[in-house]
Image (cartoon, rainbow over all chains, first blue to last red; front, side):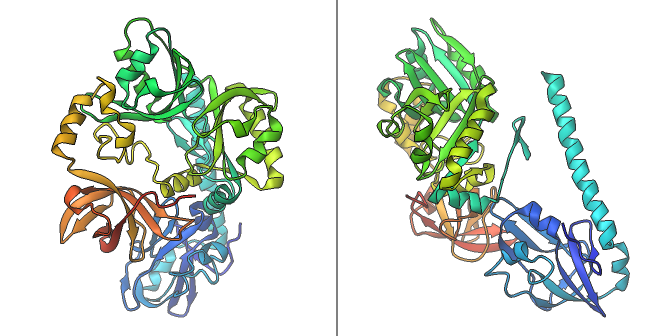
Length: 146
Length: 343
């Protein structure tokens, strides 16, 4: 699984590309894989304010809907117009053509909470292990019940 | 994998849409061993079956299957099930996994006289081979003449030397078979089917595709469209409810409801604006709440957002336009005929 260097990552599995005062935001490869086939994307309007750690949109697979949280606060400069008609672009190219919004950041301090590629890779590994442990615990419980 | 009613279940293999398309155009193989099986046998079996259920069990022929509803005293649905008539007084009931203990206790409560009950859920595994190529894939593995097994009939036979109940039933809206076998043989049967079917495009399919497939066909899912408080008349299951067959649990309530008329009805919705309606979203008409969504998705076959919903009867007419509240936004939807998809 790929986590490009040079991007910042959030615990909610969004990525941020910082260029000056502008932040481009999308969801990570891990997130799109967990969701499966994405069939609908809800985005904010240009000019809307997004608040750090609040939902700014949603991605939906055939089976479920997930909120997408703003890793940084700011004003929406641009949204990816390709996504409403071609939501699967996020599955195909989560870090490229599947970007979601571009915002003008209000506070660069917001970036401090985000992870580097290396830290995020570790975080994802940890999450996977936690999932496995839960499964193992469940299995152990099942055996006890039997 | 996700946990469901104590089972570890595969939600998807290659991806929900890919698996969905495979079932509609070729074939998919589902492991549905979580489904429960309850056996009722003995001289009093038919009488008990008639008492606990809405459909007319006396009309099932030998080796025929019947969709049926276990009923409660309030006219609500305990479970939606399939009855298999194995011998004149020997029935196998396939029940929903999450309900199997509830169902068994319920049936036990009404059992009297000369009947024997068994919750055989752990003994049986069930694989569902579904899709237009299902017969072609299964035939080389069995001496059963599949073209003689009509829809909603079954027979016993060997598949890849494994003894199975082979039923021409399913939950996808496509032709196909459900195979019941001893749970210890399940893995071998799964592998044999996949190997035989792979050249014809058979794919393993998970719970995610099972849900989108059944939703396009408007098959109800217990816990969504049906529960202990919904009646068959509200759920559009009057065709299963044989009020003339004689007494059964809940019949009086249903007779009364039929007389007075239902207050809400299960309908199909198609969204007219972008968005997807999900379970428990509220429906509005002119600012008044008129119902709730029970299941919704984007239909892979139709490419449209579809949903099943309970709607107040005065707003339930075909072509009526109502609104679904999706994350605070009112989205227009139209009431359309069911099923959404017909092969």
